[in-house]
Length: 255
Length: 50
Image 1: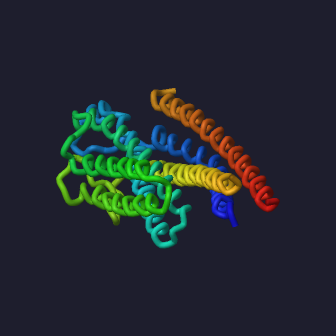
Image 2 (image 1 turned 180 degrees about the vertical axis):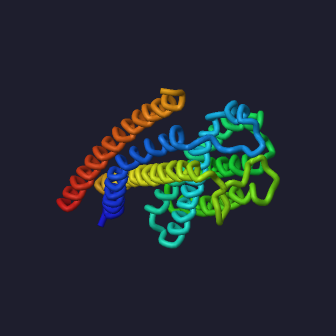
Image 3 (image 1 turned 45 degrees about the horizontal axis):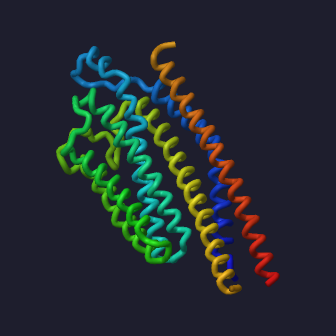
């Protein structure tokens, strides 16, 4: 019976690794298409009442939009996967779900970092400030990043085992509750961020919308590939730990 | 070529390099997976031999 867990981890990890491998080439093509859409296909947006010279002066920095917004939306997806993994772990107590949650949280942090670094690059020419402290969207997004950094601090502070996975699952589920707050912050509070995407419509020029959808799909596939790859790596690591533990126990018994 | 063409080309190069690295990491991980599988099988054989 021993090694049963590690064999299961290895089998799942190998399956996930294989699937992520198949997705690499399509992902590369999608990213190139998204770059083409953002830099060459999409026009600069109309700014009603604005002087065309001013539009040109702000110019191509607006193209950050395609990857900034797509990364933000996919970070929500990644944190939703943390939530799903957390609930699934609490229901099944299967460690694979914990590995999935932790991998998704890593990818969520990666995407949120992209959002919070590309945002200021865009904010400076648009709003004349690098970081609008007090803006509800920016602050709730920053809190989201800090919550999931805290998630990893919690994980690192506990020894491997059910207690750690249980706490991490609960922390991930509670952390996810900030996502609807981030989303609703521009709808319910006064903020510098324009309301472009609502539940029922996308208020964008058709060509800009198409280019944005290309970027959204590309980053979504990148998110999935990274989650699968990191889950696979985490499961391989767990399998190795399990084998080491079993060997220690065997040695102890033999002695 | 105008400025945007160069920008597009630069980003494609950056992403190509990133993907080459991702592909390398993926291959490396497959190798680690194979090695772990072998270790697991060896341990199982020894355990059955006990």
